[in-house]
Image (cartoon, rainbow, N blue to C red; front, top):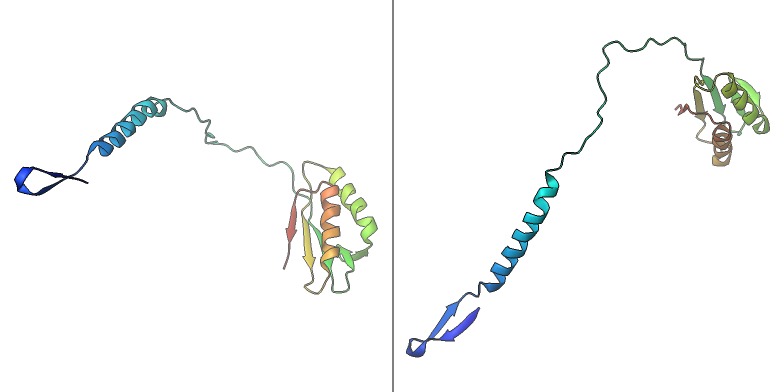
Length: 136
């Protein structure tokens, strides 16, 4: 605020509106510059509705049940298997049909070691298995 003395009338308070006008003009210029940019259309390729979906010709293979018990023993479809052979088993399942892989269902006991589970997941990743689920 600016205070000025107007002769004998005493102090007179006036608001200095110059900074407000400067800010308003800057905002107006920014709006004028950016407004044409917002009017350009953006093309988005949206998926189209399919009336007749393609028929599913292949039946998914049966899932693989992989269980890790409290003693860190790994079971492949209720049969015990060594961790060293696990990746080879997974690779043979993936190579049967890479586009239609079986689902790997992992059921790890709460008392099993985390290291065993990480080795199982590393073997599944190295075998390029895509469908991995955890069972409680």
